[in-house]
Image (cartoon, rainbow over all chains, first blue to last red; front, side, top):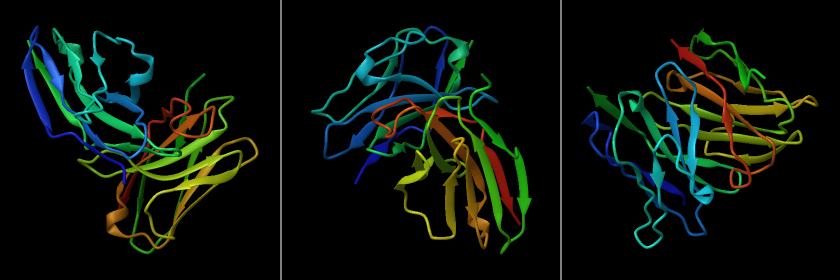
Length: 107
Length: 115
């Protein structure tokens, strides 16, 4: 069965500090992973997907198949990064989401 | 393009009633998926429709049903509502079938409260 685990409900950092949002997955096939973000009063939107290997808004995520992880990182957090972040794993028809991590960046 | 739209925004029902939620995908998108998001949890997959046929179903009871129309809009129906059905219901659209094949774009959701 597909499973996504985000161990932290809340991550609070100061502006300029590095950020790492953890995501671990369980999947028997070749995984395709995403990070979605939801800013306050906005809809859920795609932040990045691992196959595109892009850096979006300074965020990167590397798929580590050995550790079954897809952690989201940013070297210097900004206040506008404060949001809810969801890691998601794609099956054929479905996206399986983790429970999400709230990132709060304080000035 | 307004993106994925959903109606209504909010809905209050009582136990045992039936509800219909509506979704209009992004123009040109042929796939619509429905998700349920309970407070404090991530979205949970309910259905996927592509080209008007059901292509995937999550672990939800038969009280949940959906359909897709020729214009690719979709309805989600929930019968015999329970208190536990209170949630944000999200619709997502994509051009291709399958979550692996294509990015899913989400609507703002319908907040259902069951009293």
